[in-house]
Image (tube, rainbow, N blue to C red; front, side, top):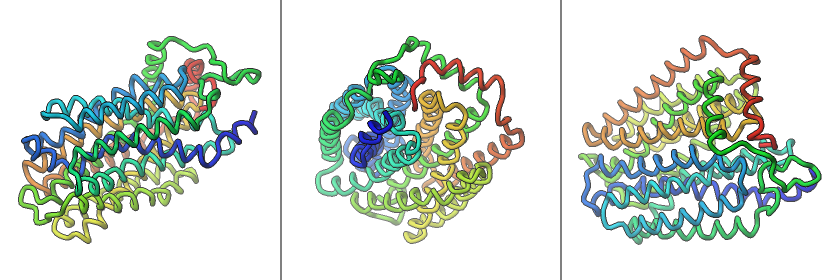
Length: 430
């Protein structure tokens, strides 16, 4: 059986999963560097335009909470393809939106379908052989991250030529292509969850009802303090990330008296600094790999604080701003790596539910941060944005200091029992 899994998880297939995760997650952020254009076209103020990203993240939250758990007991191949095609429909509808309210509603729908990104990650984990699982998931997560940051670059370049509506049309075409590729190239049998029977690996195992599967997530959150702690830290970190990148478009376009006056393509290219910083996160992650997750978490939050200080100065110097984005995203992704390392060590047989619990909290922070970023910029410009972001980073560091005072034991009887109760939902490798 192992040889079969290894054969199917070729480099091309892992790349397909990574690109699928990236193209889906990127749909949440295509309009982020173009909020000023959306606001002008649909006649809304800066703060209102910022809610476009919030709407996408609200939809994504719904998808994480209600769609991702379906991957535990339905055919992931069909689920992912359906979500990709649904994403295409939502994007095309948003591209034709005549009013801002319509755009918000369709953007939220697109956010729900973007949950395909978080279905693909455990799918890749389930198909991978144990000795390659970490590397496979790492590649898929890298694709997801590049999709989030790269979407800003792509949208800026396209919008420079054809406007923000053209960006959404191109994104819809990409999702159709990805749906076709996933349907044609992904495994047809191992995609069926629950294949734990060695004589019939494609047959689904017995699973609880959908409501019970959702309730089991709450049980896991209640019984695992480390998960609760990391959910709080993830929410605060993502809130700061969204504050920065939502308001950045307004700063670079010259809104509210800013001295920058860049076009859409140039604004999008600032995402390169974010990608460079995020891909440097393994420097922090190496501490976690050596068992120093606590130290690495502290380092990540301190890097974020330094990043916010540099971002404040970067409001008047483009070179400092580029450096600041690199440093800031390094800190954000460093904290994210530490959080995932900590929560996935809790219950390996419940990774899907852990993913849902953690990522819901993570994007709740994103929704709040997107709204705060636009509102803060409208009220006080870039300085107010950096003030809000600095407070969030200080809150994260303070919460981490409090959580670290009472670390959870490495092994607790009630935690083991909790994982056992959840095991029927995730009996196969995740």
